[in-house]
Image 1 (cartoon, rainbow, N blue to C red):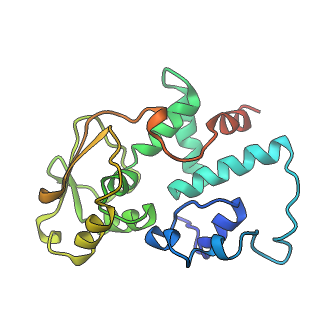
Image 2: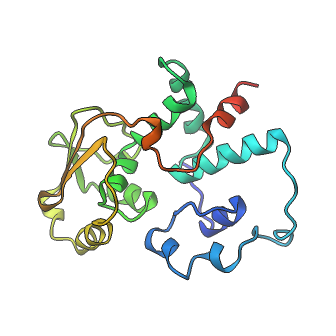
Length: 208
């Protein structure tokens, strides 16, 4: 599958907002947006006023960047959200939060969603005792996520857990850090999604 391979800091600068795509670096003085708070490229410092369509498009692009997914999959999630009961925009965010790579990040096993995606692909995690190496796998209520026994001595997980220990755990997840396990207690609600996303703009864009 195609994947964005350019410098991810350019995405934050394009959106003029921290998307926390590089984990700990985003909180340090090395953050590119903190040092160059303007868009990338030759004309980056000349920001134009966006039209209604432009605002909707940028919101969609920003949300895709948050979760690290491409257009075809994002549109698939939107169609899935419209078929569920409730508000389509909130359903969309709930589906995105249910992605396995996002859950690994939320549990504190990874410093960023990008790193979580790599760790999942390398087969470090199990769901209900079965290895899952698909980042887009959608978790369900009651699922138990565990770190493979052979991976528990890996320094990367010890460091990530230590770094993320002070971060608040979403109420829809439970974590047993000592045993490297997590549980999906419920699906996320809108007020538990702490990302600056205006999902109604995405719904308006796809509804045209």
